[in-house]
Every structure is written in C-alpha cells, then in structure tokens.
Length: 172
Image (cartoon, rainbow, N blue to C red; front, side, top):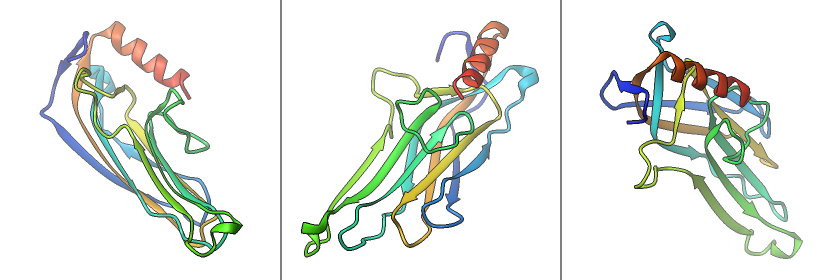
C-alpha cells in the first residue's frame, strides 16, 4: 500500500470500451470511477489490460491502431512517455510497395499490462474519471478498444490527496 493511503475497498475490476466514430479519427471515452472527493478517495491501479482491434490489411500501405488509458482528457492517444498515460497499446501492419505479395509485417505492443513484481501499483487516479483513447491510421473500417482496469479504492490523507490531484491536473 502506498504511504499516506488506506484501502477502503476490496480489489475491483472496471471494464469499458471505446469505438471510433469514423475510421482513423481520435476518440476518447470517459470512464467514471465513482470516487468520493469529500473523503479524499483515490483509485490505486494495480493492473491494466488493453485490447484493441487489429488494423486493416491494405495493399502496400502501413496501418495501425493506437490506444491508451489516461488519467486526464487528451487530444491524441499518446503513449507511456506522457505523464498522464498509464498504459498504451499499438497494433500495426508495416508494409511498403515491395511487400505487396505477403501483406507486410504485423506488430503488436502493449505496455504495461501487469505491474512489475517489485511495484505495488501502476498509478493512482485522484480525480473521478479516467479516459480510454483510440485512433486508427490508414484503416478503412472503424476500430475499437476494450480495457479492464484492476485496482482498489483508497482514502488519502489531506496533504497526499492535494498533491495527487494537483499532479494529475498539471499532467494534462
């Protein structure tokens, strides 16, 4: 358990799905965590699993689907190099004009799915929402992403809660 926090729930799983409105357009979906800010309640994320659709196979064209889970609203998918992104996934087909016969090379990446054995948690969400983000590139069809977030609710002392909220808001 992180210092300054006291668990207020058993382990919880939260699932959600986001679908592009049009192919190759960024979309985010808000996930309500139902936290009680009057009690300085936060959500401690212990594991995340992102599952995004496969990109379309387009002759002589690279395609991809990017997805992420972020603590604040974004204008692009982002990746784990962004402070407010807790997890990201990418499925892509790398193809060039010389690869028309075999359809290209397929790559699949998701980081992080599980916490490292030495860590107790992936991140702490101090506001009541997190955001599921998706965007395709060069696809002819709309794509979707599903997420399962594992964690628990905890109560933070006042100074820890204030620092977490400020850090989260400033990471946007």
